[in-house]
Image (tube, rainbow, N blue to C red; front, top):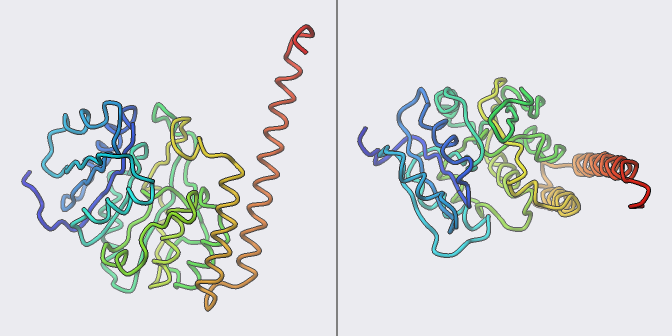
Length: 287
């Protein structure tokens, strides 16, 4: 297949030491039942075999760029945006997957100029690609939602509840009208942009799973402390409440904060139980 100069969709894949998973990620994108797309891989100065694996996949739709130094995540993701040539934009992390019908369904949805962004439900897979959870996501966002309904719901939800980046699609040109991916909220990096994009128009949520998030011990989220995640989300909620005060209410911010607090209590309970079980299993001589 020849190189697509002005593709309808740019699927961007930021990658850092992703040799374990990137082949499966790229294969899921290449398996689409929709042809008018390019894949832009941004290798963030990997020290493993990531680039070799990408180069071994012979498909002219794949363009590989290599950063000479390792960029912060937000800067790397914005680099992907700058290299995108498609009208529509999707970012798929190098350990996630999309379903074969993902692009065709979402491109059709984005044919409505009044819709600023679309997303779907998602599955969760393990390191081996086996599905461990299905049809997750913000069910309150299924179907057509106004801009106000979308941004209010996104602030009320945890990022993990909304879905991975691969579940979303929006217009490349709209990103240029915002500040792009901002480093202000590391753990809310993606949802921060989604809220600002949804402030520009309506949202449509597909009621089927079109993406899979990999629950892996190797990804950034698993290596980020629980406290850092929750602090980021709370800071994000309050920033959105100020930036979009005409649409996001104090109750939305408070609801989002309460959700964070409940998640923190649950996480603390799980961690305490794990420690207690480990303590009980220790031999007397080791206590």
